[in-house]
Image 1: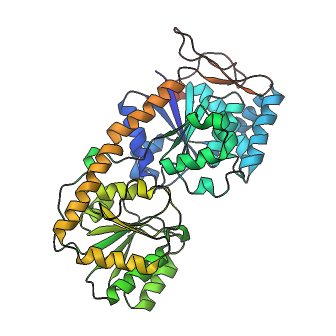
Image 2 (image 1 turned 30 degrees about the horizontal axis):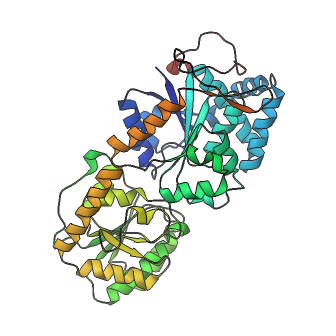
Image 3 (image 1 turned 90 degrees about the vertical axis):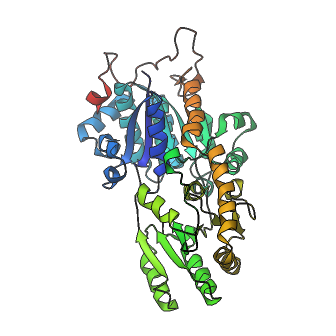
Amino acid sequence: MTLLAYLSDSYPANNQTYVQRELAEIERRGTAVMRCSLRGDARSTESDPRAAATWVASRASLLERAIAVANTLISPAKAWRSLRCCLRSVETPVRSWVDAAVCARRWRRAGVRHVHAHFGLESASIARASFLLGGPAYSFTVHGPDEFDDPAGIDLPGKVGDAAFVVAITRFARGQICRWVERSLWDRVHVVGCTVPERFFSEIPIGRDHRSFVFVGRLVAQKGPELLIDAFHDALGRGIDAELVLVGDGPMRPALETRVRDLGIADRVRFAGWLDEDAVRATLVSARALALSSFAEGLPLVCMESFAVGRPVIAPNIAGIPELVKHGENSWLVPCGDVHALADAFEAASRSDASVLNLMAERGRRAVRSRHLTERETGNLASLFDRALGGERVVEESGEPRRHEATITVRVRENADVMGSTAPRPSPAEAA
């Protein structure tokens, strides 16, 4: 059975439910997956019990690191090209290069044939550096907006150029990638959205007692929580009867709590902290609408989740959001950073009849079922993995990548074993 590795910076972070859903569906389809993380997360087992089996690169012993680095000396050209990749794309290039060497050795010993990284940042850099050392082919998912803050600084063009394929979660993200790479690479970039599983959906309608607006996300400047609170305060001043629930946490929480008290609305704003998937769903079901105020985004998963449970969305008209959230059809889109427009949306949602809100939400629910259902959309990603495994990208001794075309009888050609012996490999459990 082909073994696929998933690599993330920290698996699974509380705000990365989509990765867990994706992995579960891929495994349900019969593909063995090795979960890998650059750093551990003490909260992982709370959201995904299987995370306890995650292999964490930073926990590799000094001996394992020394052996991995020594093995790179067999091919100085590959070692240099891999190190140069790290020098161009990460803040700690030497540490990341050593991690890449450790990953390459561990993945080969575990029989991994392909590595997929989520986000085009450090994890994608290490997947690429590992590939350049003779490790397995790789792909990665670009979410935005972080990858587009400094595409040259993270060497996004180089990552796309060496990847078997690249996934963008929105058409907007795909366009931003194409903006930075050669025309010949555009066909390598595919749109596969984040997803919501069938079990998340709800048919509970909005009623008169649904008066809360819910925010879900990190409490950081990029998400604009100060703007959200100020707009909500403005809307309260217009006479709406509502509550704002902030689900999530982050460095801005103390300042936001102070702001709420200063505005005199502490009885109308509740900080719920991080919640697990079931609690997020329950909070959305009890709400009137979702409310977001980000300054930069990809396409927030919570927009899909809100539609899935039948709740409309208030969100900024930026990035990939308008691909799902349609103003006047299933939600309210507001100009980014416009506190008055955001307050108008709060007021409109609060005063709208429940029948109108339910009609809007049903349109959103149909859109999510059509384009973001886990059981369907993950199949598109699985097809990309199957195609990539039909022929493995290998690196020549010169350090330059070359595409190897598979034959009819051999689906995957293994790289020349430059990372270890050619003895039979242990099982994934033994390798871990």
